[in-house]
Picture (cartoon, rainbow, N blue to C red):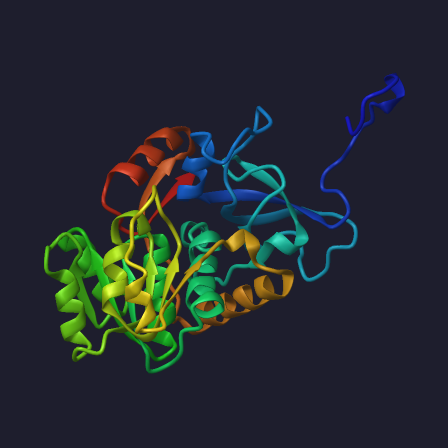
Length: 310
């Protein structure tokens, strides 16, 4: 049904339609935004709906007008038409990207939102540059490990934080020069000491409600905080931004233009090909256990990406 009216408004649609692709899914990524939508924080949804944007699998069918893809191609998705928590998904051709043979399907399911968000935060919003010092404040999750890998490959000094010893080991393994405990009372002093007292140039922040006020005190002159996530309000002292001429910028992957999205996936493709990007899968669960995956994502320390297997 595309409109209300007489019986003749009913019609048979077939998928994929023009410009679309059907992908047989082998792995599905679990992202925090799906928990927020599920909880109703983003407003009403048309029920029923299928959650999810990120997945990886094999092209099963191709609609008219799609170029650059063939049936049988290994791909990852960065968005779908019908939802990713499923065995198959209909996607627009622009949402489907080649998955190199060296990257597993589970790793492919950990690419779209995490790596897209990390790239947008670092380069499109915070304008991070080689030689700068980057703090990834919560670096052991999907977006965090992606940000560490991108920043290290681009020639930055990377400081990552995590809430567990296991998480800090992961942060170092993924390329950070230093890994700190963000639960320690003096960890911000440690960050400043690692910069020789100059402060950090860029902070990638996932819990602005907890950390933003402190983040502003450790920025270098003209430092930038890229706010990727927050679970509530926060009080800050604006004077901390004034002498430093510091900036706080918001990051929303959905706001990226078509040109910016093309740049994101070109950078991801290059990193996957040369090995500087390698998604970290922390846990695989059956698709039927999506609820348990959401509980774990919101209640346990982050350690790589959780993936559902249809």
